[in-house]
Image 1 (tube, one colour):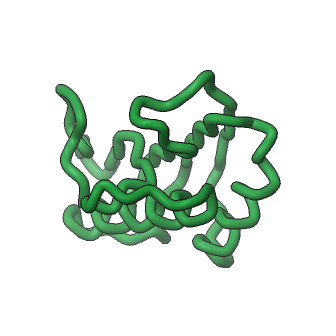
Image 2 (cartoon, one colour):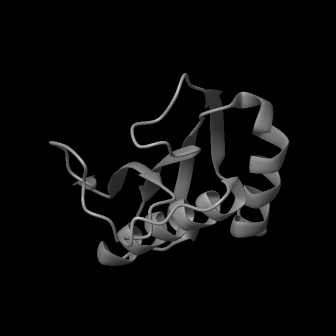
Length: 114
């Protein structure tokens, strides 16, 4: 898991709810791949944070995804769908004017872990 790049928590738990800060395709080595690779890594980062709090990807009820280039939506959606399989939380995907360190995608999640 990658440590926060700024002054924020990776996740905040309130009751049965876990709010996970935006995760990028950073794998802890400083390596960033293409958009599909970054998407898969961001989801792995989310899964790791969930596990640290006793949860799993199946507990995610909502994701918000930020793309550095909204024109790559189809490529992102294919990688996202493959990474999550049959799981399908509510989702919003928006385009941005850029992400902090040249990342192509950032994903935040909300999970319910009773």
